[in-house]
Structures are given as structure tokens and as C-alpha cells.
Length: 164
View 1 (cartoon, rainbow, N blue to C red):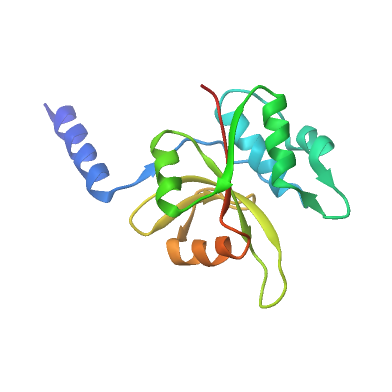
View 2 (tube, rainbow, N blue to C red):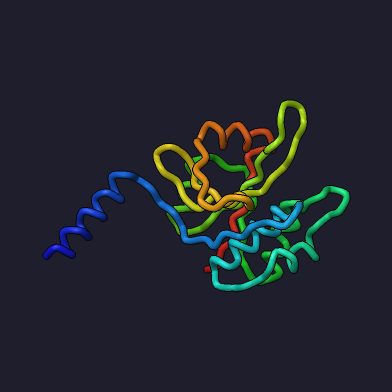
């Protein structure tokens, strides 16, 4: 009886809090490997183990000090994954999370007039914002306003990598 009470209490608290978080493994990025680390963590979420170093061998561009989102998409396709690469909005990102699909987004972590592109993985959301893995920090809460500000600067692009 007590176990049932705690389970119901937990369920009600979870529903009232309005939080949805996917169990996407955190991948601490190596220097300039935010794209490969993000893709590696999403691929690991689906049960395959491909390191960020292996991904970087195919997608890292030394002159950019990073990777193009189209190259990340092509790598995922070559490994048999389905992808969606598009301009999006907050509601659509939430829909993908509800469908149990993590979302890779490209944000601008720069300051003033300096642009610093950075890939993150959106793994959940709540009433206050998105829950992200950003390569340096696991399950970081990012308020919607901060997310939009960083995301709009680079075109509001997302990459969804998934299996059917």
C-alpha cells in the first residue's frame, strides 16, 4: 500500500511539474568537437557506440575548427539513421522530444560581435526551458529566452537523428 502511494505521488508530481527528459548519454566533448560529441551521444542513445573521434575523422574541418551540420547529417545517414535537417521552432522541438527523439541544435555562444557556433543536444524540456547536454555540462537547464537568443542568430536550425 505504501509503495502504491509513493508511486502515485511520484507520478502526480512528475505530471504537475511538466518535465520530459530523455535518457541521452552525456558525451564530454574534446576541443572543437561539439558537433561530433553531440552526434555521438545521440547515436549512443539508440544503442550504437561510435566515438566522437571516429565521427570527427569524417566531418571535422580544420579551417572551420568544427563541423558543418550537413556533414553530421550525412555521417548519420551513412550509418543507417534517418535524419531531419530543417529550420524549426520551440513547439516542434518539444514534439520531437515527446516522440523520444533528441534534437541537435546549433547555437551562437559568442559575445557581442563575435560569433562562436556551438552544437548542443536538447534532451528535454519543462515549464522554464530546455534541458540540454552542451558538451561541457550534463542536463543543463537553458531558459527559453536564452535559447531563442542563441539559436536565432544561426538560423534556428535543428538536426534530428533517429531510427524507425
